Length: 106
Length: 342
Image 1 (cartoon, each protein chain N blue to C red):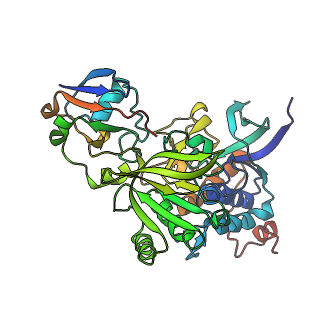
Image 2 (cartoon, each protein chain N blue to C red):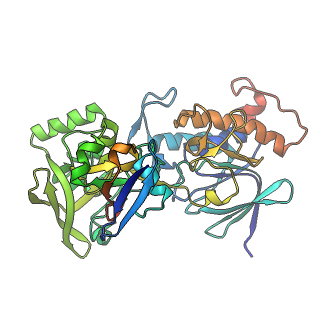
Image 3 (cartoon, rainbow over the protein chains, first blue to last red):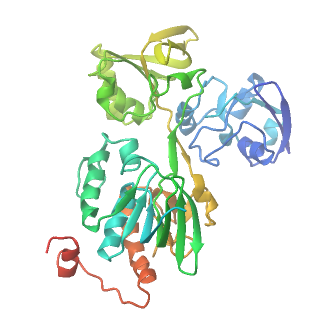
């Protein structure tokens, strides 16, 4: 089990349990975390599960794949810390992960 | 009480697949009414890429969305389909044992023996970037699609995005714009390599500018844009002078009322069999982008095939017990009479 904390635009925090093998997006949807829309259901085809990974976790979650990089073109206010949460697999290594949810997915 | 229109078939969606279904059903003497949320036929071909060429329609090496739509309308014409535009089907229920009742948001009521859902991605909408205050400029300075290129002649245009729409419209509008800037968040593009090369040639020739960064704000008055604020990739903020902004961030498909019709759905798609392209409700068929089956390809040509096959089963619902003789339009006098050519 890995704890994942979602920080909303207004600062509200919500920590959920993620099962290794799931994605961060799935953990968010399962726990009804606001602001993660995931319209395409995890196919890396919509960019509506955009999150900003907190600096200290950036190395641990790994790099964006090429398809994810392409899909981020459809996100708004993309930063160096931007990831699509459907492309971050949960493992014990990211127990404690903290990500910020953008004000709006679109 | 609204007047009730009785018909053999109601087709939901006047895109290419819906239009070809009119033809295939027509050959089997099945009369169709066609409902579409847009104000004209063509679906995505009309709304999103009327002037964009399509290269994978059999026997048409190149055809624009508008031209394909016109050709399909011409082909369906002998069967006198009746179109109901600017209407969304909101209700679809069983009426008695064999019929369906459909209602639109415009108050039209149909009683129909079969229903063909050819609704594509549902009612699709361009993604609108959440730039503060963008609403005030929509329709006057901000556009999410290009319906008529002439509208943009002489304008100072900023196009945002890195996909095919952004690149195609950059290349097409650069020659007629007063000035044109393409803004993208990185110096890589998902668009067709040819389009990217063409854009880079235009930049090299000084006919347009390419900037890397993201929009942060808009400045203007009374719905007229004067400049766009940008955060550059190096972190520096700058302004781009523009009276026209075209953001191309892709589309979002909204299934809409289809979800409420009691059909089995799979991820917003309607699962069908590959013999009849029928949904979980007998008599309700689904063709084109909205259906799903193993191996499904979202291609217009797949929808054409699906239309031909559903028509066979539709015939049996509408003419119970009657034998359907398979015929070719090249040799059958009876089909040729229907087409008005014999």
